[in-house]
Image 1: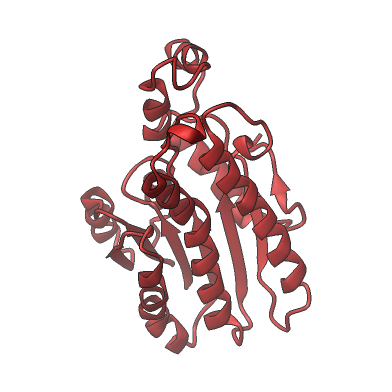
Image 2: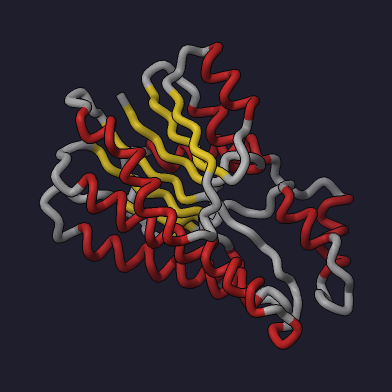
Length: 250
């Protein structure tokens, strides 16, 4: 049995990942603020083991007990083949020059995009440290970590931090008795709610908004389904973890 933990499955890439990973040999653990009934229903139809946990990952203090609850049955299962973690949950907003942002909005962005993956990963590694199974951590990063635009300081900073965190974990895990492989991936520009959010921002707040609108109108955004399929190819590939930062899904 492969246990696969995915955050942010209510919509977008996370939803597409969950749908494509539904399989009798997979135990999916989905985490999002609101439950995705479509995933729940399809998993039931396909006889796929599924646990769906509703959680607000911006509330960092709730993550420790959440992950411990997840690993209760996993820890006791002697037939584990693999335990995978996909840190996908993220938010783009707020999009605005930093001096115009409310403190709470800055905190919320950094909590979800950076602190939540760090705390989840910390718990994951702690609870699987003794497990001699295939362990993989896939962090969904962004080209915004490398290519900086105005009014995206929170998002770019959090994704740059996620890349650095991924590199650090890779170094640490090479010293572990039963190491986990880790990689951060830039998935490209995808037709999700994040893109809708940025297209709704005024030009005064985000000078590049017209370019993002044009990309959408010209049909140049990837679908969540295509993106998810490429991410899964990376996750299950034999050479997963050899490249710690993957800047293109191909």
